[in-house]
Length: 175
Image 1 (tube, rainbow, N blue to C red):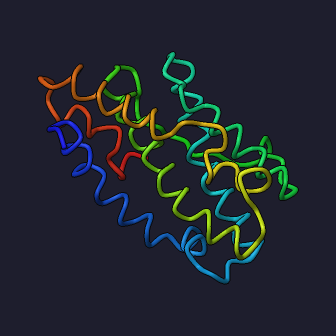
Image 2 (image 1 turned 90 degrees about the horizontal axis):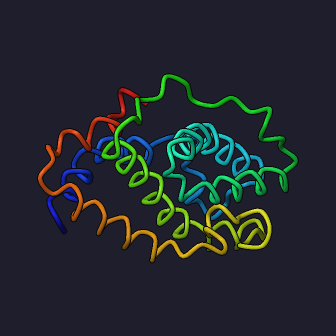
């Protein structure tokens, strides 16, 4: 693991631990998850992902915007109009490339967790990569290839930058 990835991992450790304990997301790992719990978890994920993906897309780093489309389709399958949902405000500035790459690291990293939760959701609710769980599956997206490319870009392009510069947008007190 390179120094930039290590710095990002350290900078996001607290938020990952908080997310692991988040009441609304915990059912995603439960074998007895209900449709209501799943819907609530997707709504919460949309509230975070939507404004960040939009901000990244506006700054020509929206490689992950298609995952937002998958999330919106899953919400529609559950009878939820994504346009009517609240989203997180007071986002950190994503003005520089290091900040945008750090945000992309967080979003794309979360895709790996989603794929780990997919079998549970499929067994409990019958949703899969074609209906209801496209977002968790990252359906039709080569996330492994994207992740590898992102890590290479982080390490090769910013190896001499201050690691703190990467951590700023991932500080949980700012999200």
